[in-house]
Length: 73
Image (tube, rainbow, N blue to C red):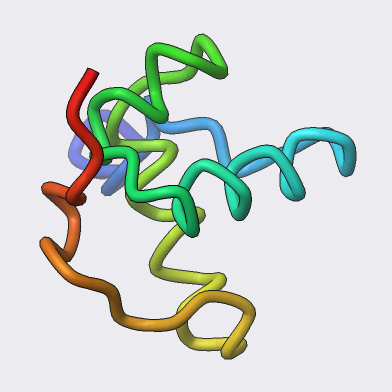
């Protein structure tokens, strides 16, 4: 197995169900991807993949500013 390569092996695809509504609320409020990751204390890559999954499942919609958001702090 020394020649195997595991893509994305360092990412965490598991989410507590209580985190999902928070991420959706932050997304809908206009927070950027990086600010969402800070607010929920997760890696930006984990949050990106969750947002991608939520988008595919039509749980979130496109928004002004895309991943960069529109909310100023």
